[in-house]
Length: 170
Image (cartoon, rainbow, N blue to C red; front, side):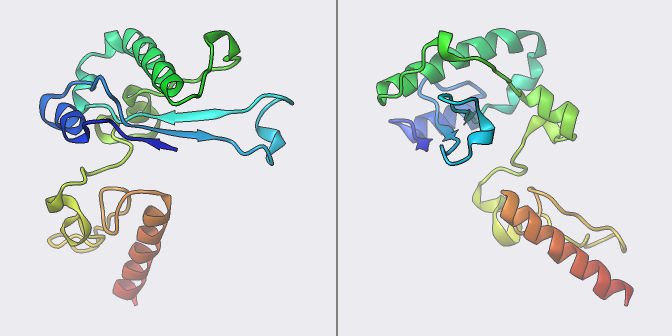
């Protein structure tokens, strides 16, 4: 489920231009289907929540626990307004991944899990190509390169890069 802000333009302006966390956050929520019983104990379910955060959050690592607690409350309140009530006491296990974690664990620049921004100048053809234009033998793959963000696109980009390497070697 994707929950968009009432005023998306304002929320995204806060995220990108002012580096603030919007009061009305966009969120992505995935609740594991009941058909996969391996993901939770009987009668329970798992939930994954993804929030876009400004990259400026990386400048305040010491505040991350407080920011995370505030965002958790904000998410649960937002879900409640949509009829999804999850009391704190119902949360048995919680794992929080912050941009700091993404940067440390995955080497993602400033913890940005989605690579380049989705502005016109960083989409499609305008993204970093898989083959470097200036350095022979240097190739790129990932969310910030062609063809773009997301597991299917990054996988396709990996295949494209492998094909380019093979073509250049042969």
